[in-house]
Image (cartoon, rainbow, N blue to C red; front, side):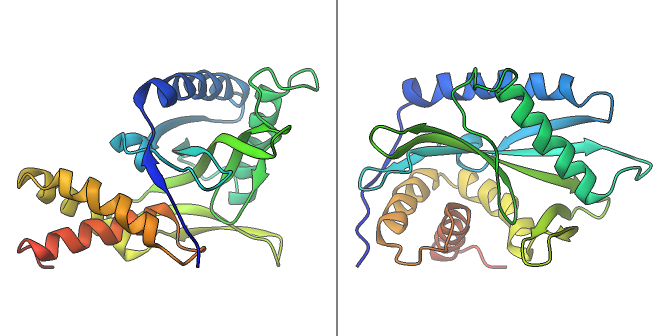
Length: 219
């Protein structure tokens, strides 16, 4: 059985890392400006100041950032956008062949581009950041660039339904003074989660949904 020991990371630890990420993102904006501009938003646990780490693991804590590219004429394909940003992040982090920000080269996964700071002596990740490239649709839905590794292809895909309903539920929870219950239940659920493929965002969404239902909010 997987044993977790999640805790909330204190602000004095995560705030300097976030400030460094601000600098990286601003340099990235300058790096890709000849192709396009973009807006960015810290999302998920970093936006809510609910950053966690598992003391029983070697993965540290992470940040999530949404990048929204300004390409109103559709000049660039999903693949071009993601590759331009991928190369840009690597160049910003490693302008002379070594990282000035201590981050390794960018890793690519289905939904995100990831940079990590590693303690190689002790074989562990200190902290990381996931960049998801998104597009806000006029109908209120959101799309993101998805990488299909098997087909080596990129495409715009809609976020799942639960993603769209979450903000309204969070607002309801805060309005009714239930945020501390969410914080407590979230840590409990993360510590008892046995599904290695279930990401923090899904655990958080489940937590908010459960707190809502327990307190009289139904869809």
